[in-house]
Length: 70
Image (tube, rainbow, N blue to C red; front, side):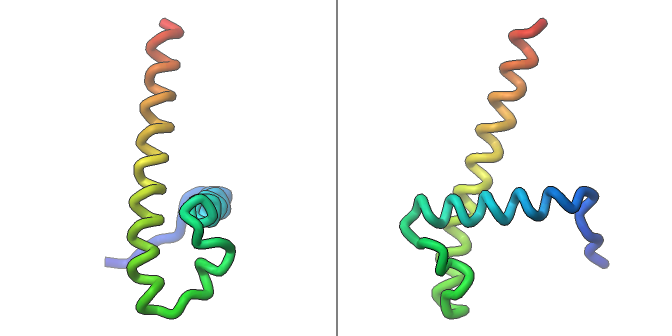
């Protein structure tokens, strides 16, 4: 399967910013991208999981806003 690029190039930038923000919140700092590959595997999973939780929460909040407008 060929992987296609994102539909919106701004999405890549936004996700990168979110990743770094969450890494900072987790105490990983700006050095997150400079970790050795083995350490990065474990920290990336934690950061990715937190990103997913944040995006789900944002989606739920948007749905509630839409529901409350009706």
